[in-house]
Image (cartoon, rainbow, N blue to C red; front, side, top):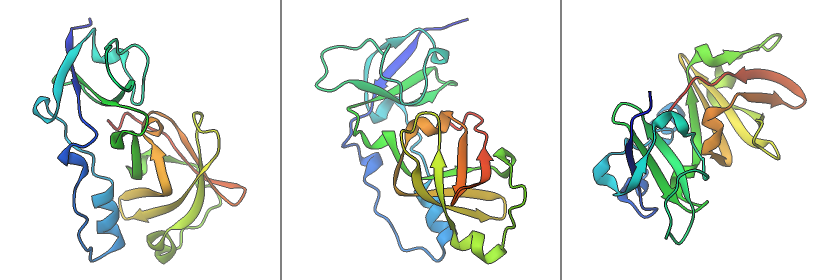
Length: 185
């Protein structure tokens, strides 16, 4: 059953996106910090409307938000199912639509057949091409595994929409892993 909820716009110049990057004792700590996602609340932005239910929205979605009068189109940047809120940001360059680092649970990894992890190599990262249904071209990244944490660090940035897709990781032409995404929002 759908329940009406709040649509909250988070400005692109919000302090949530201006964190000062500290020095890190390890690459693992840096990746963990880079992969943090803001925990949005109603007070981080302003109410711009309502919605028919969070189940009708996906990360990165532009159509169906039904809020007019904005300088730039609104995109879904986060969904809070518990509080029944959909957070949106204006414009395709809104900082919440892009991520430098994605993190996953090891249970989300499939494949790895014939691929040998060398402990130090996985902590230093191996270059991969990340493929997904929504990507025109692969995104070049580094793939890291630290114990029970898996990270992908983009050369540039990943679109937020990848958090709703399965990802194929290739080293050269060989598929080394498939990340099966289970709602990471």
